[in-house]
Length: 182
Image (cartoon, rainbow, N blue to C red):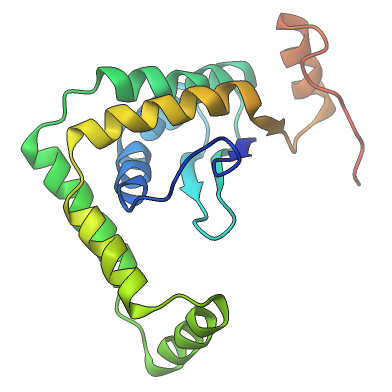
């Protein structure tokens, strides 16, 4: 199941802190609420800085209604977050590790070509890196406002059994429209 929206269309301006925030959400809130408590095999959020699309995602999720409530509860979680220095540093280190992961020569060449085609300069990447390193608890709180807008504007898609979707519709009639794709 996914819920997402284009954050740029909702007024968001790119800041490297979003990468730290999505990293943190994946190892805390999404893991605990969607995976452990909700029973999904996985739950995470991703942001594509080129398109502006932010998505909450889960897979093999038996708890559609609960997961959507958790997606929408993420803004409140971030707003109330009291982030310790240790948690903040771990999230930053994890994010930098993803941004600057080791690559074999063929992967480095492919990455270089993609960056060239997208017009992504070394200066742009350095600015993002600095924003990642400068991420504060306040960045998490500010991002809650963006997610509040996503709660209203986001689109939901479920790829699953008709029975599971019908069961979710029983709790909120007409919430999901069933379209057969296969």
